[in-house]
View (tube, rainbow, N blue to C red):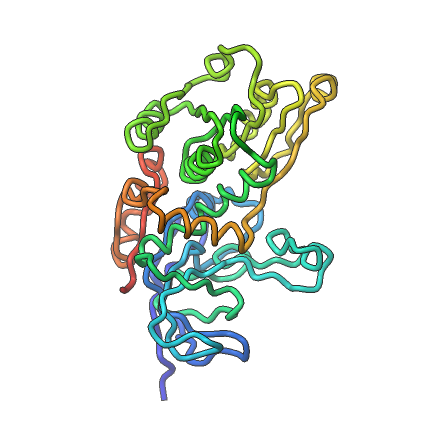
Length: 336
C-alpha cells in the first residue's frame, strides 16, 4: 500500500524553491499534535534561506515558521478545528537557558523551517506545548503573530517606556513590528532605512512621521536615541548604528548576520552604552501580540501586502525575494 503524500515547499539549494511531494505524517508522537496548516507568513529568514545567506541552516529545507493552523484531531485539551498559532521554537527544556525561563535562546533550539523542516505543507506534527490558542483571530492574523512577537520581545529587552526616544533601523517586517510595539509602550519612535519606498509605506500605513534615509539625518537632533534597534541584517548598518545611541543608551541587535561585527571600544565605554541581542520570542510576547491584535492596536490588514497560494509560490519566489523592499508581509494560503 502506497504511503499518503502531500506537497512541501522546499528550498533545495540557494536560488531553487520547488513544490515536492513527500510522505505525509499520519500519526503524532506522544505529546505532539497533527495540525492542518492554514496560513504561512514569508519572512526575511525565508528569503535569506532562498538566497543562501542564513547562518544556521542546511539544505534542502522545507521552509515556513510563521504558522497558523487548525488542530486535526482532539489532543491534550485541544479540539478538532481549534485555530492555533504555532510557536516554531522547539526548545529542550533542560539546558541552562531553558531552566532560567529563556527557551527562546535554548542551547539546543530547533526552529521550524530553519534547524528542522517547517510548515510550508498542508499538515505537520508539533509539540502540544508549542500551540497557542488563537480565538478571535483570523488564520491570516494568526500567521502574523510570530514575526510581531519578535518585535515585541525586542522592545521588552531594554524595557522601553514612555518618553524614550527610540530609533528602528531597517523598516522591513521585523522593524515595523518593533516600531509598532515601541510606540505602544509610549516611546517617541523614529525610523531609518535607505529605501524611500519602505519609509513612505511606514508613513502612509502606520503614521510614522519621523523617517530618515541616513544616520546623519536621524541624528539631526544631536543627542542620539535612548534605544536603537537594528533590524537590517546588514553588518555595515549595524556598525553605523552605534553612533546613533545616546550617552547612557542601549543598542539592541534584533537582526543576525554571518559576519563579525566590530565597534569602537572608546566610543562604547564613554557612553556607558548597553549592547544586547534579542532572539526569537517568549510565550508572553506571543500573548502580548494577540492581545494587541484583538484590541485593534495592530492593523493586520495594513501589514498584509499580498496573499498567494502555495502552488503559485515557486514561480514568484525569486521575484518576491528580489523586490521585498516594497512588501511587508506575504501570506501563503494553504487552507481555512
